[in-house]
Every structure is written in structure tokens, then in C-alpha cells.
Amino acid sequence: MNRILTAKQLEQYSEEGVVIVQDVVSTATILRMKEVLADLVEKSRALATHDDVYDLEPGHQASDPRVRRIKKPHVVDPVFKDLMTTPKFMGILQDLLGENVRLHGSKLNLKAPHFGSPVEWHQDWAFYPHSNDDVLAAGVMLDDTTVENGAMYVIPGSHKGPTYDHHDAEGYFCGAMDPETCGVDFSRAVACEGPAGSVSFHHVRAVHGSAQNISKRSRGLLLYEFTAADAYPLMAAGKADWQAFSNRLICGKDTIVPRCVPAPIRMPLPPAKNQGSIYENQTAGKRYFGFVEQGGKKTLLA
Image 1 (spheres, one colour):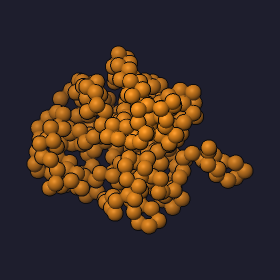
Image 2 (cartoon, rainbow, N blue to C red):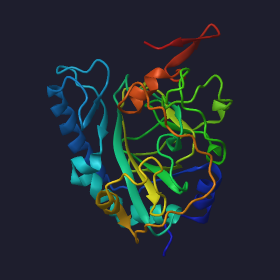
Image 3 (tube, rainbow, N blue to C red):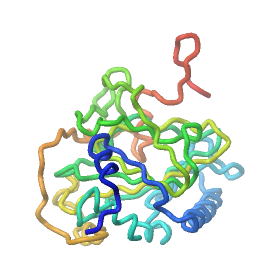
Image 4 (cartoon, helix red, strand yellow):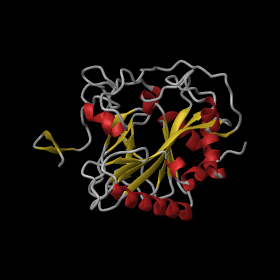
């Protein structure tokens, strides 16, 4: 198997839990994705609440459509599905996960100018633990992405540490770490910045989050979650639709023999009180993003 990533990039992913690769997605594909996305946002004017495709921002209305997430974009339009099996994209996945790779899921997070909901600090592993942690998320940057328009932050090396508590004060899963008690030094966070067409690959156990978009530019991030084919989801064990699960294999061979490795696991149970996407889950947790320092105190941005 010919490698796409350099030895330095592989080492960075291994040590830091994240690597950013530029020029993975062609300009033509990015433009097509943005055309499809613009059409989807336009169609959201007809909605008053979330549905199977849309997750809406607070304040969404027909005259001012605000969409914060497109759910399962690979099902919504072929352009989001076809990218996964392009040679360069698939080659990087195989470099990081091995020859046999399965799609776990996808979503497209949007941050509109001067808005765009933040995503609080969390680990994807807290949402969907597997039998092994050869699991990652690939973030396709649909726009030139910087700190100002809401780039994702990752804490380097956090994928080698504990699985943090993502539960609220009452013990319910809330999809977010408590920034005051978790003991993580957030000043170490590194922004995943890059021009449109770049892709960030972060380990499932890496601590990450993103702030509100404070710029005049939009920020779209198409996220895929991938696993090694022998990584089986713990929550769905014995209950999954086998055919649908097997159909998500995007390259290599399938297996019914899970590979199990020691890894710190906390189950996302009891389920979140605020059901829905991560945005809904996190409304029950403590906030970190969306605050500014004023006179030595943190004040929530309006």
C-alpha cells in the first residue's frame, strides 16, 4: 500500500492526535459542495424546528435562515458521499487506520458570520466508544478557516490521556467536559487552520472544541467519522442493522471479529436530558466558549 502521508505527518498524528493536510479536496469539489449547501440553507426557510436533515440555530426564521448542522450529508447528496472514496482521501484514511475502513457517520457544521454556535470541549470517544480506538474524525474545510471564523481547537497529546467526564451535575450525559474541574490546560490548544480544501484528521480521544464565529466570513466544516473495520461500537453491539453496518465499509475487508484493546471508557449513560445533536446535549453543561474577559471576570457574549 502506497502511503500518502509523510513520516513526519504520521508521527504528528501519533504524538499529537491531529494532523492537517492541505489540498486534499479539489477546488471544483469544494465549489460544488458549497452550491449544494447554499440550496439546503435556502430550503430551510420552510422549517420551524429541527428535522432529520437540519439542525437549526436559535433565532432561525424564514426571513433569516440559520442552519448550524446538516445531518448525514453523505446521505443527503452524492457529492458528500463520493469524496470519501477518492484516492487521496481514502489513502490518508488507510495510512491512519489501516487497510480496512468503515464510515461511522457524517455531519456538516456551519458557522454563519458573526454567529455560529460554539461547540464546547469534548472527546468524540465519550459519544461513541468502540472495542478499540482506531477511530478518527476528518474535517473538510469548505472555507478558508482561521481562529476568527471559528476554527476547531485540539489539545495536542490529549488522545493519550483519560476519558473525561461528560456528565452534568445530576449525572446525566451532556456531551461536554466541565472546564472548571477537568484539569485540562486549555491554553495549550492548537487551532486547526487552513485554506479551503484542507482536511484535519483528529483522533477519537482528542479533546477539542470551537468558539463562535466573530468574523464576516462563513465557516463550513464537513465532518466524517471513520473507524478501522474491526472497531465495533459498544452501544450498538448485538442490536445494529448488520447489513447497514456492513454497507458502511468504504475500503478493504469486513470482519465479525472485533479487535479489543485496553482504553479508558465512560459510557454516555444515563442519556442526555436534552436529546438531539451535540448542541442540544451541551445546553445542560457548563460553558467555556462564548465568554470574554472583562475586568478579570468572564462575561457571556450576546
